[in-house]
Length: 514
Ligand code: NAD
Image (cartoon, rainbow, N blue to C red; front, side):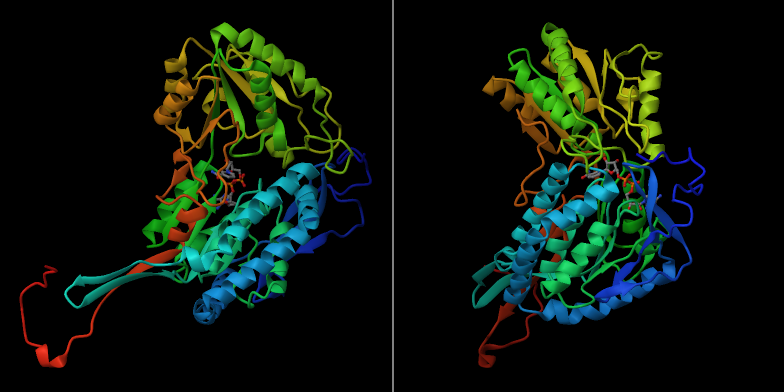
């Protein structure tokens, strides 16, 4: 494998000397539009460390142009019949499904996740297109006949206008589909600002939506960084913003967007705990912890980050987790048999490795050190396990977002529950037990938006909604599912009467219904 930076055959940016890299441009008005800002950013191949593409980074003026195109497309799209919108979503579902492997390959190439993981992401994203295909039913309002004598009331749900989505690097296909399916089906037009680290999947999705019959201008992809996001947040023509990413940025997006009068849902980071009761099947719990901690190299907002192990079973559970780690095949997505790929960038890999370096000094035990024996090229870090972790240690207090599982030993259920509740994040939480009563109590008690019972990654299906509590979500609507439809529409209530003009008279009293 090539070793970037070690040979004279490379430019300082990792590119082979004399080679040109692919350029990734915007998608506006149904076609590829080259960036005009003069700014671009690198797209790395995380498995080799090479720069594989250059992505255009939009200026504020380019945001304005994309929003203007989406605004022009809005009146006709919102007037398009529900059955036609549903038909386009059905077709999109078929076309995206038929090209699932190609989307997954783009995800693997830029994100680094292995094919089974990338295909899983496409499939979970597609569920949302499937859900949005039922839009005629989802947008049904209510009707009350004879609310007062001769007076009827009904409600309708109408789209907001131009809505924007800002998405993270870790699910470059699924998270855009969480947003675009419901937003478009509800009659909005959309500007997506995907992560600049892995921008190609969203470009391919744009092309597939066009092939499905979506009119030009309804779905636009604008690549960029903070500059583009700031303009989206202040643009008066953007009615709502869906954001998924880290908590500091989510908080900023929520505050700036709402200050500018926009509807905002901003999903942030996580620190998901898995509470293992002594009666749990420890092999099952160890399998679940390993799968949910190291899948996608731990770069999932629903990854298990902390195992809360009761003292009575902690030694046994830690041993079972440790014994499973050497069996995980770490390698490039293209290598047959790889189960876990690299991290997204060299900086992120080094940041994650920093938690391992500091763990022993803080009093924890580094049981498996993933810095040992890593492939020399690319941004790899192997699965790591830290035991005897406590609140106050950096590896407990901060979101790591890498293949590092920490174990906190606890005396009883109440202590475990308190740790989860005291955590600033509240995305997912899981309990492993054979005791139905304990599981029900956990479900009732726990301060988290998504709860798993013997399920380590309880990502809701598309007909429920996804969202955490506390610093894992800013705003009051969860993303996708029924709350997604609420988010992308506003309700209008119509009160009507068809009186006989002969009975009409002036009455200055406040109208009563009785
Ligand atoms: P990030 O916050 O760095 O970036 C997310 C998006 O915001 C990107 O499109 C990026 O270009 C943009 N951005 C980055 N910095 C910005 C700034 N200062 N101002 C405005 N925009 C900015 O997140 P990431 O590293 O791409 O993704 C990983 C994070 O996302 C993790 O914290 C993870 O937990 C979180 N995440 C949460 C969920 C969820 O559903 N709650 C899902 C996936 C990922």
